[in-house]
Length: 395
Image (cartoon, rainbow, N blue to C red; front, side, top):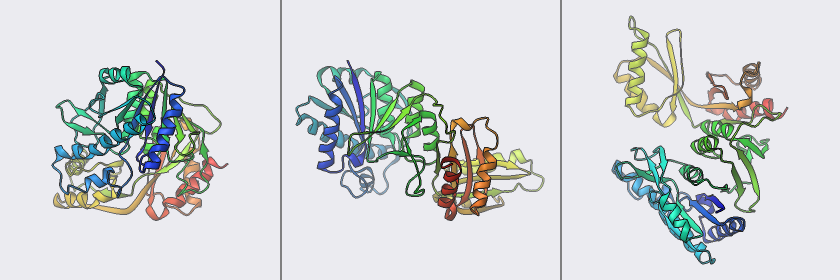
């Protein structure tokens, strides 16, 4: 059985016309496949009646265990509606929820981690239907509770199902004409990317690029699945995401910026062992339910960043504990990404020179084998991205 897995995002299903266009794309791909599994997101965006954000506004303070159950409704509805559209085109189709599709997660109510895919229900559905429409973004915990996978979770659903079923093709339909080396709204000179490795795409996504969920890229790389991104409007191929590292002439594949952030600088008290102090301070931040980024400790000073919306919570936690601290905000982390930079000399020098030439101060830096990042003031974010893009991708 030749099997194609497809995914349609919320904007591809927002209106009746969008849904008919998505059905066109589905039927085109079925021309080359015996069967299809189609993963759908909730229809539309905030303000549309069945979008995830609109559903969330219906209950102002949902009980933690019920929040995912509320959020999952949008995808369940989208699956039933789209299966009906496909059936009216003469294709035997059925809709299933994410938990019936066998997605099993950990116990977190929202933003759960996918742990496994039980294939039996999907395989039985494919025996009797040419198209199975799966509600994305959701699964079931080991305790039998509905769980959701966080923003972009339908990408995870699609990739995980494709891997579990050994699909011949995985196609993500997007309302875009390309994957780019940078966000075109921030960097007008951004270049189209026709091929990219799953690892580089994962790194770009973790650094803030809104292309494909980083967990989906990770699953694709680990399972050897090639992802094809196609334009919803034209049906044409936009980008191929290769499961293995590509060797090309360009060792930097893109630049990206993360969400708005605040930088904290903390100083240990007199006579207190540094390791004990840092353990206590970081535990306070974690206890406030805040995730930290860009850690660095040097000469008795610790630096880290938190999402800007969490700044006040961290301020209060440190104040109550009597921990001396200062913060700088609003900030943004800007990054260059490319597995090809590993072991190359002079990349950090070019990175810092490009920002210096644009008159931008680096408040902090971190790096890995595939990324170099700097924290800058939010007002300098776009100029920093433009300078880094010009230095590494327009030469």
